[in-house]
Each structure stands twice: as C-alpha cells, then as structure tokens.
Amino acid sequence: MHPRLGAMRNHLLRGGALLSAAALTFTLAACSGDDESTAAFCDTFASLEAQTGDMGSIMSGEPDAAVEKLESISAELDAVEPPAEIEESFGVFADAFRGMAEVMGDALTDPANADQEALTEATERMTNEEFGQATTELDAFTQENCS
Image 1 (cartoon, rainbow, N blue to C red):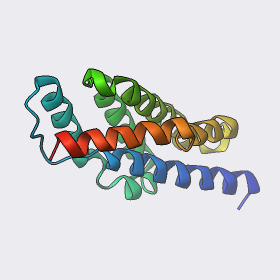
Image 2 (image 1 turned 90 degrees about the vertical axis):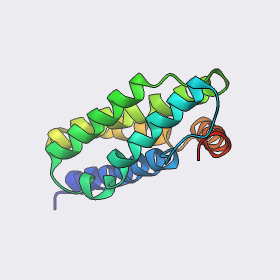
Image 3 (image 1 turned 90 degrees about the horizontal axis):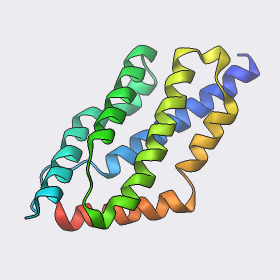
Image 4 (image 1 turned 45 degrees about the vertical axis):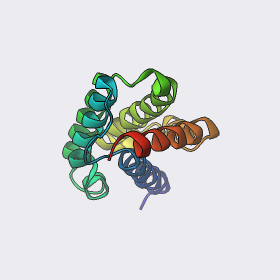
C-alpha cells in the first residue's frame, strides 16, 4: 500500500470512530422533560440513533453510502434548536461534527486526493479540550432531561 494511502486510511478510520463516538454519545430513546424545546431537542437526538447505530461499518464500507449518511446527520444537526442553556456547547459539538463529516466526505469521495491537513485539523477539533467540555455538558443535560 502506498504510504500516503495508508496514512489517509488511518485518518478515515480514526475520523469514522470519532464521528461514531460523538454521535452515539447523544443518541437517546425518549425525552421526559416538560419544556417544549427540551422535548424537541431530545426527539431529534433520538432520531439520530438510527442513523449512527451502524456508523463504524458504514465508514468502512461503501464510500457513497458513508457520504450520504454523513450528509444526512449533518442536515439533521443543522435543524436542531437546542435549549438556551446548552446552545453554546451544542454549537461546538455540531460545528466539529460537520467539519469532520465534510472532510471525511471529501476523503471518501476522492481518497487519492484527500486533504491530510484538513483531516488532521478536523480530528483535533473533535479531540480538543473545548470539544470535551461541550460533550460533557451535553451528556449531563441529556442524562438529566432525556430518558
């Protein structure tokens, strides 16, 4: 295997794992909160469960299916209107996910010309301290308000 393709494959696998882990962190079965925005937020993440449940095998399978799945999840994230108390953290999470989905989609579509720097930057955005704090806050919110 050409060294560049091997490095790109590692980025794709790591990126796919990050996308799966990030999305699965927030998938929920139902919402028990009373507030309408909380209920809508919980319902949206519940619908993501079906989309992210098999992300690992999707990322390692057919590239077109993976790109379509990433686009679908990104579109659903764009439609989310989070409750005010988690709006900033959700923005950090959604921006990082969309950024990773975009570069992963490009890399899956044209692996030979994958932008290694963009893949590295997207991976770093999903592993930095700000992203970690945001996911911790979102996890606490969903555990308290959605079950």
